[in-house]
Image 1 (tube, rainbow, N blue to C red):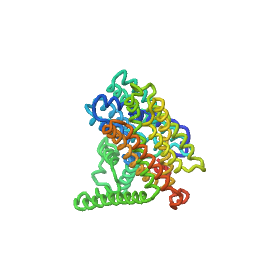
Image 2: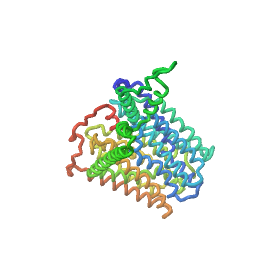
Image 3: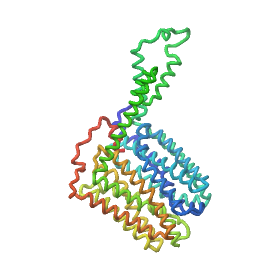
Image 4: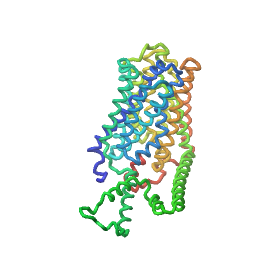
Length: 500
């Protein structure tokens, strides 16, 4: 491997940025604009709004809940293989959704399969971008993550036209075919660091070769027949078998005692106990993270924010049609307005937190309170232009997702960023999963969206107020980043993994 420092902040790194931007564009374009598909599913399957809303909620929520697993896949196998596999998942989920006979099948094909594939793309693109950039990492990540918003803006209008021309099934088939280009994006993701899985393979191969060098060869192996070479086919076959070793250190010990099944069983039990001890240590550190008052408040606030702020992305088009403000989806749907203003909010809010005189926690609380006020104003808005303005404001304040890693680092420090961010995303994904069905059930019960938006707006307001109050300096928190010792990394790869 060439030294990583020679490739940082330029050169092939910008090709990585373009490929990662396009990967997020292709993967998240349709799920982020699922509000355009929602009225079509209601008309096609004749199910309740609460049941149909599970499709849009799962495609976003499942990915967030499974984000620690997806990050582990990228860490072990690398960005390129994971992106190729996710391309098959995303495209396959779209194509299966075109043949869905009912909403329940759609929940699986679009909600779960596409959702997990999108999360794999997100983890892979962020990891490979962090590897190629150091000083300009913030700019590179900002460009890459805007791919989701730009994709939602374009896909909302494109899917609307495709439905008019080819119907709902034809639209999903075309979107699935376009999503196969994710595998082409993966071709640009040349790794700088060897993934952990290949490091284990290399270690296993080196250890076995070293053992064979010091081991006295049997007499039969020294007999070389006429026309035979020093390296026989059996020798190359042994090397190939060694390349599929999972955990070389433990399995080598077991292999040495394979003749005695009892001893091999004891060694296997030891390996399992080591794994259980590692899991228990992980759960203990997770419990310690949640004991931090500020972190607990942040998880609670993000849960309420996800519960209340995500449903409008799914329901705004149906709200406009239900209230009679517009007969059909407009040329520029409300979902597109939310997407483009979310992109602007990510960039502007991300730039604001770089100023030393701005407190990022209070800025995040302000965006939550403002989003709650906007949600409370949606039921009293009786014009389509007013809904467009509310959509733009809600999208801008929803751009505070770009601050999650920054605030998490301030609360728990860089050494626990990866684990704390996974816990935080779990609560966020749980809120996104529950939000749309709750709003749909409110409509099925009251035959109106007004009560639902009053409920969601109150949840977001409550989350912002609780988070701002529980993070006041009077609580004497000791989670400031300046109070923590500097984290020392044994390699650049460890630092990249933590940031990603």
